[in-house]
Image 1 (cartoon, rainbow, N blue to C red):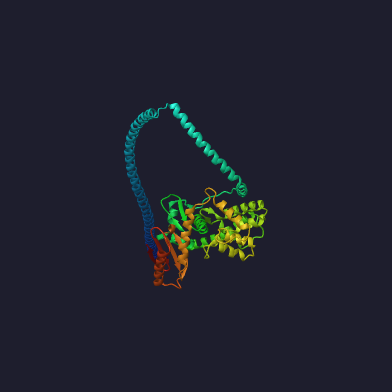
Image 2 (image 1 turned 135 degrees about the vertical axis):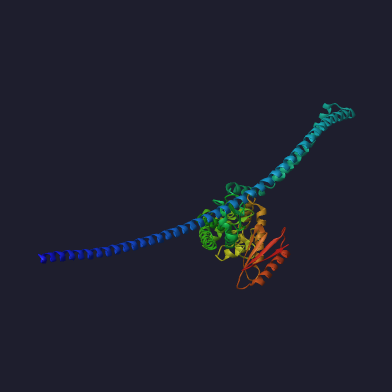
Length: 517
């Protein structure tokens, strides 16, 4: 019994010890779990705090970007509004000036109307007085002459009859003299028949071309920052670009039609492409120049085919094409040459000569005008020397060099070319003399400027009021460029006559400007 009690007591004590150990172990595990949970919670809170800071920083950066974008757009809008305000203010000033002018004109018209009414009233009074005075004088003359009105009429009719008999005698004598000139009349009839059989169209060409611009913003792109695009374009093409307030239009001005056409096509390509900068401008101008060479060849072939001229040497074909862009007193030289060819052939056929030779001489008689700006001398001599290289006949050469009467005619075809040339030029509206003088003056300016050493190119622009000279930077430094500008201005003063002043601009790395006054 005591042994059993001892076992029971031992078991109880062992169980209590085991329970105590388990209780202590569970408390440690629970504390560790609590510590791990606390640490995990702290880590999560720290991570959440860091993430919140990153989101807040990203939001602030996005806010700054949006703010900068808004400020740029707002600045651009303010600039655009400012430009529009300036444009509106300018137009408003223009309208105010026009309104003032109209008011002054209206007042002037009112004054003129009052004066006109007074003059009409005075004229009516004077007319009545004049009628009364004439009646009194007629009655007084009848009293002095001692004749009635019928008797005076008879005397006047007899005098008129006598004068008519004298005029009739003079007319009979004139008709007799005309009958003695039938030979001259026959030649005139040949010319008239040629004129009536061939009546070509004629137009007066101008020195400007217009290019349509889709918007005013495109005008700004054509001008470029500080005008660099328009300066590059004018330098590459040798034309003058005029941009004013006219909506949707840019004007290209140049006395050389080929250069003007190249500039017009190049500008249209640039506007259509939208990429306008100096490098692109040079690329487009070079490309357009090549296309123009092909167009000149095409026009020359068409002209030779239209004039029915076979076996035209190939170097002559593009020269004929250049005549399509050349004018003489406003008349298109290629159309004029084709017209002269047909007129000469018709007259040659009437006279029993070879119409083919006459037609060939007529087509080539002004060929020198295609290159007279590149060589010295008049276009007849230049054309004759050029045709001689291709073994043209003596009739064609003499017709080319002598069709202005400077050289004696050696073949019967030359007078025919001279007559056909005069017929074509004398058609009503065919020529405009002022344009030829204008072109000649511009060409003289360019030739005068290119005569100086170191000058590569010269362009007369602004209707001859400015000459832009491009010098070789390797041969001419800044000091010499200033001297060249002064020398050109002095030579213009001594050798040319012109209204106003001519600006001479020599361009190298810098521009030296002098004025010929």
